Length: 352
Image 1 (cartoon, rainbow, N blue to C red):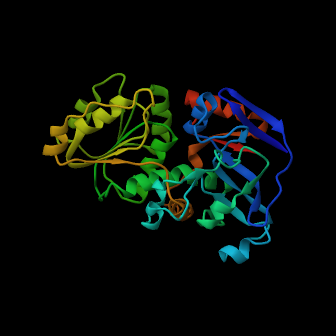
Image 2 (image 1 turned 45 degrees about the vertical axis):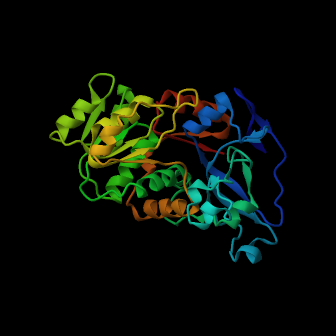
C-alpha cells in the first residue's frame, strides 16, 4: 500500500510499504480521510521528540473498519465489525495516571499519539492500536456525517476542550486571534454551542482574514498588520474590552494583546503554543490582578471531546463541511503541507 513516511526533518517520502496486519487486540481500517493541520507542517520541517522514524504520519483520521482483532469485542465490551464507519482520536491517554483518574485525560502525563508513537493516517490502511480501544477512542461516525467532516472532529475536539475551560456565557463578546481552520472552528463552536454575542476575528494576513471571514461571518475583522488591535477592540466594545479571548496562533504578541484587551473578569485561552525558541511573553500582572482575569492553557483533547465533536457536527450545531476547502489524493499529500503553510485554504484533507 501507499503511505507517507517521515524519516527526518524535510525527509518525508510517499512509499510502497506492506499492508499492516491486524493483531488480536487491534482494529484495521481503510482510511477514507486524513486531514492536515499546522502540526503536520511543523513535523515535516522539524520532526518531533515523540516521533520515532520511520513513521507514517497523519492524525486527523476517519475510515471504514475492514478487520477486527479476535480479542477486541470481548476485551472492550464493544461490537466493531467490518463496514463500520469510524473516527480515531489522535491524543491517546493512558487511562491510569493521576490525571486520567481525575478525568483530566487531555493532560495525561503518559499520553501517546497516533502519527507519533503509532503509524498514522496518511496511508491506505491503518491499525487502530490497542491503547486507543482501551480508552474508548474509536468512535462511530453518525450516519449523516461524511468521512471528510469526521476527520475534522479531532481539531474540533481540541477547540471544545479549550472552550469548556473558559466558562463562556451567552452574549459574551469574543475575540479570536488566528484566521486559520482552528480559529474558524472556535467561532463556530462559540456561536453554535455557547451562544456568544459579538465575534471579532484578528489576523495579520489580509487574504486569509477575508477567506475565513467569508466562511464564518464574524461581526468584524481586524487586520493586526494595519491597526492597533487592542485599541480597535476597545472601540468596538465601548471601552469595556472582550469577555473571552482565544489566541489560536503561535505569535507571542497576541497573548500580550489578549491580556491588554480583556474586560473585567475576562477569560483568555492560550490555545496556540509558542515557538520553543521564544516561549515567553511580557505580562502586566497588575492588569491580571485588578481586572480579575482568568488565563487558561489548552492543549489537545480527551476521547470524550471527540465524541462531542461528532455529535455537534451531526446535529448541525457546528457545521464543518464548508470549512474543508481543499481535497487531495494521497499521491499529492506533500502538496497539502504547502497549502497549509501558505494558508490558501481553510481546511485541507487527504483522501487515500
